[in-house]
Length: 151
Image (cartoon, rainbow, N blue to C red):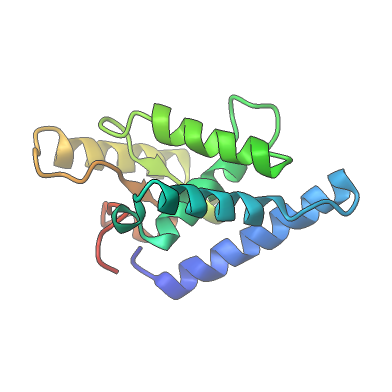
């Protein structure tokens, strides 16, 4: 999380975009992404994982569900489906082998993404002290960061 204000601005824009798309689909329905973020934060706090996560990391995890929703046909359309996808991401992503790349505003090309994965692999292949989870955004490509790294 190299540039916190820029990250907050990008996340806010994504919240607004996702919520307006869901309003059209649900005809005035709830703000889905915001609700999923709140549920994720409540779950993290309730299970006493809060010291392990920065707030931005949780928002990026949820943002990834709306930006990169494959294998599903569409992004989450309800808080419940988004929350279950969040839990699925935490449980099933291969954190040891792959960073989670959240391509906000589609600023990263396929080449950039593959370079990030290569850098992650080379830096962490035999590193016993590496953090258990990495999240990369377009703005912090050069610094592979963990969810609880200092900002």
